[in-house]
Picture 1 (cartoon, rainbow, N blue to C red):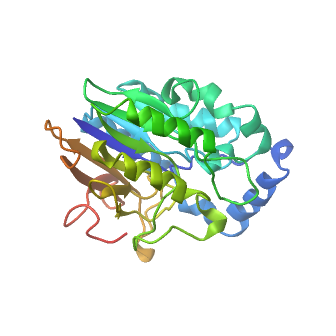
Picture 2: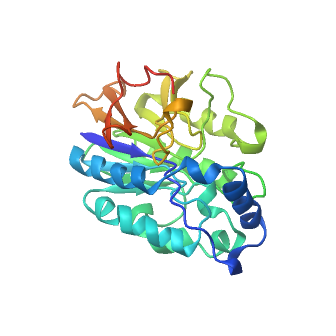
Length: 297
């Protein structure tokens, strides 16, 4: 089974004046005056959709931040670029902090109302069965907050423990927006943009490590992979890096996405990773030279 993992696409549309208040006003200033607007482009995002479509994967996991500021126009644009692709095979989607950017977008569940068919239903964690032996478990870690930090409700962690107990005969990916660990293997930080109770989640995951293929996430725009140590085996943590990033060779930055190939054994270690990066000269995504994560970015 082959699964594409995309994240932090950050589709952008300049917000209407009527939407410029609160955090969205601050975000627009950051986008327009401090250059972040140039970090993400339609060209790369459209190439991303085309590349994943051409890869003929069996499923897609998207770990959030599909928009820059969670405006209706950004959700519309995202659907135009990625709707057909996401409809073509099982797709699992979770929100990122940018998708709950404004209070009303979070309170009224704008993203869930628009893309609920990819997000599942009911209380989190939610389970997406992709075949007879493999599932994706999605965790809600994003919230409306003046900072970029996330948190998982204690009740959700209890339900996750119970859910994994009931899935002992299946192999699973855990999908959420926030990293658990940094690229050096230590706790991810700073606290202003981290998952505030990451250690509580780690305790649940290591208890069930024998069935977990990996934890997939986004949030950090420069990709990396590391390990969550403990339990029956170390759990790999995968972040491809921002999938909608502009091609900026002078800064050694570009967009990435992963494809995971899951073998047919019952081993949670039976997984391989390919990483693709956008090349502006070819105007397409190509395999990362040297293999996944060899470039260190």
